[in-house]
Length: 497
Ligand code: BES
Ligand code: ZN
Ligand code: ZN
Image (cartoon, rainbow, N blue to C red; front, side, top):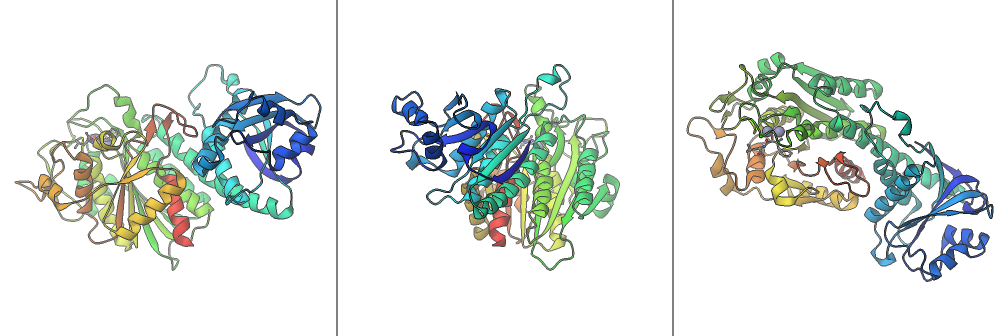
């Protein structure tokens, strides 16, 4: 879908469908709504007075204008009670309107934006575009039957009335588009199956992003990773025939800017290895590279938004499979940090590959390290499907994440890292075990990671719940969601200010 901004008035603009948003039982119609209503001889106000359209949250109503003014149709979308309005509802309403238009087979829309209360044209435009593009996302790559029945909107035009409005809307539109396209890039990788999205494909994608955005990308083969000392990453990779890759993608390399390392878990399929998972729902484990996809997306968007940071994306990418050569419970691994780990379960592979990646990230002397990982089933038990676990060793970094979380609607809930939990990870034969008790599983996973970042400010986002979802949400269709991307980008944008 192409979206652009033009100068014009809603009631004078010819289009397939004009988009208007309405609060529940408004005292009076405002802005464009009022202009269109008077052009339409009070049609909308009558409709609302008779309660044929109430403006309840996400309520949609298609109307025909019968030539009363240039738009062929009007779509009214409810925003709910004015006093309960927020940007998250706005993203949802934008998505619902977009889905309604798409499913009706309408190819083009016009939407007039006006600021109101504390909401600027720029902020409204950014979240409109975000909600819309993320809401109409579909993954159709592998559907071959009735491809001609796939519905898509071709064009959207946002209207501003003055040059200043147009300029502000254009800024918001651009930001929203960059961020949404990055999220959709990640969703495509996550929804792609493990026979298509291999570690090699992740590495190729990183190289492509580097080429398109003039960045640095370095890919280590497992043998190279092993020879620099990444014994944990190499061990996990041993059970797979698919070549593993250790990917580093660097934006603003060599510039005098603060360095932030982003580490993403890149297990393209997690069978559990020798500690094999039950087969029920095992197909979901193609999403175990959601952290990796997020890192690629964040770096692409950061470069397009020209955020003033030196970003280092680090992605250990491999499958986790059982095989004659696979690593086994009881094995002792030497990590890049020099610390040794006794493998209790080969299904706790994420923390193993991340331990080497986190240690590696410290070579860049980062101001902060942020990792994103579908690390534990336990975090889903603790927080449910829509909330990520937030862990960290630095109060001010944690606060930044929480603030960004509030702004983006990507919920992150703080979890503890108390020493008591570490007792669990002590081993008789090595420095640590890779698994503790089942209770407190997400915290124990995070504690394990904390042993590989030293004193560097670090946060760990356990995105196992929200990385992919079975029940759609207003602007998040079923499947891979791109969790964590908007949150980290917001954090970086706020930090840059
Ligand atoms: N990839 C899984 C975690 C996961 C579970 C992600 C459910 C998404 C949905 C991870 O590698 C794993 O298997 N973790 C184990 C750890 C355990 C063996 C300590 C788990 O959560 O059961
Ligand atoms: Zn696992
Ligand atoms: Zn895993």
